[in-house]
Image (cartoon, rainbow, N blue to C red; front, side, top):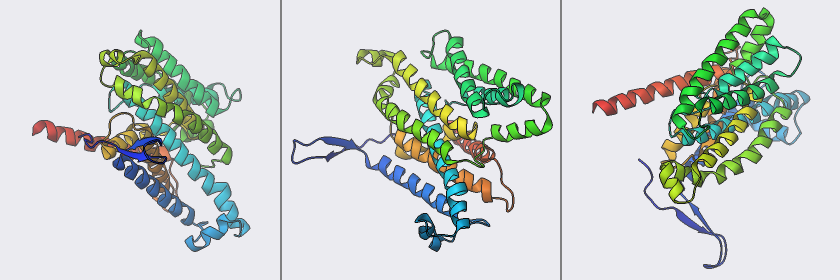
Length: 350
């Protein structure tokens, strides 16, 4: 049920002449809670494990007053990984929110329209079929773009037909995954293992340069996504209603898909096609905020929290062993989808 209360007004100047900012308390609370969860998980990540830094010593290490081992563990390994997890989770969630709004389908995501499968095919091509020509992350980004172009051409109407996008995306994704399996089957065992780990979504050995890539993408794409929020809310009511108020549905959808593709490509280029974050994080945010539209900020905060927590589980769920973070998100996403199916079944049976 959507929130029925009108937004509150925050005055940014003296009297009635100042600027007015409309805001809703519930989305603000959800964003603050998601950021708090991400920070708590980050603190546990920094302090847990064999090279973990005691919580009482963490401020001193952050200030540069720790030992060389502590500073290396924090600034070279753990902090870059945490920043990449937070920014990549936010980018995937923003992309998922845009795609769900464009397709008017709660299951719409980059995974559904073949974007993640295209990225996997591009990575397999760069790492296994034509190794050494381009880096694997670049191949993944190119594969994602090629998959979206194929979907655009395959629908026959560009991005103006959301249902055709989903059907065409499933077909493109199936062909891309078939190519990945063929490449893995024909590759050498060691190369196949390295690429397979990346294809599952991994945050191991991430650096500050990886964090800079996704951070720069977010700095550019989030404002664009926010600018598309109000037009997308209108488009969700139907093309006829949108056209009647002066909004061009085709242009809005195309712009939203382009922003979503770039956000996903930035995330995939540094951590691989992490599953289900783009699907579940926007849904969780929308259900908690009870708001209409893509909810870009709430989705970004939720996505960051989801991936940081998932990476914490991947590192410490089994002592002495780490899993690719994509394995954890896939498991969590499967549980979430099962709960949705049970809820819908109970609602239809009532």
